[in-house]
Length: 430
Image (tube, rainbow, N blue to C red; front, side, top):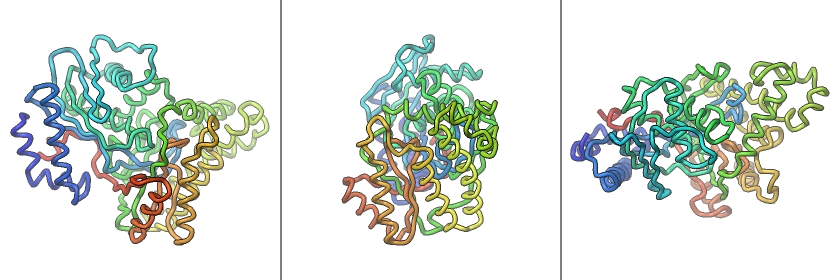
């Protein structure tokens, strides 16, 4: 579509309805202005008139902390923070991307997609994704994209996965007639992170960003994971989901993250399997002394977390769907305690004096204990980044003020679950 048609589309009642679903009814005017800014940026950068608009959200992990990489179960959802892009095809045989927030411009040649020695950065990630599309038999082509994002970077709400699934959506729309299943977005993102970043990530982040809404996923078959929508709205339960930024990003903690799947898989290998989902807690405990000697104690504790967390996800989903919200909150508290005691991802051993996650959890527990309600837990990969709090609506503002008083203004953000994952905005409005 050209500039005039797209801006006219953004001014329509259909656009208002879409923005209300994606961001909330009070955000429609601000989001329209944001999208218009992206269009202006695209035109200024590339001077092209033929383009489409795209969006891909960040994600929240409700339960199932560090289970996906061992083919476990998770409960998560997309959120009302997202990457937005104006993008158009080109005939230059290159992918050109300008990222507004980072003032970063990338140019990638489609005939040069081999992995290099550098294992970090957006350019490497996009190159790996383009290679991933080819690996799985899909078409790629040249395009230009201007991107802005309000997904908090390096904070556990998956700014990288939101970026990855945005790029997947662009390539799917332009070069594959929109026929690629959202599950493949996750496979392509995982391939790029594993091979081009040397990061042992799973599929959870990309799946939540791509699919949208509140979902539960069983990764027992990682090629075709069982994805199911969970019919629940936190607002209907009178609660808000809040993320609290603890003051430090986690971009330099790949070694800590990779150690978790590595140690879990080491336990599975002692039992003749590749992943913990293929064995059981009872089988591990029956050979505990032997496995401890081979893997060490932390690996055992992390495996216990995996088995127990899988059961918690099942129970949490049943509690939500059965209207037993208090039971669900108890499950979230138990998940957080397990991550702290057994998974041990609330701070890095490389710098034990820096414990922003633990401090934020302690402050939240003190607050909620006095109120006699709510729940909290480490969010996402952990070690640094954000925590998750589920708080009754009537004390949400008080909680946010309390956390900002102790951790700094703007540290707490009230989220909503976004019902739509990565998408071409023009198609959603149309």
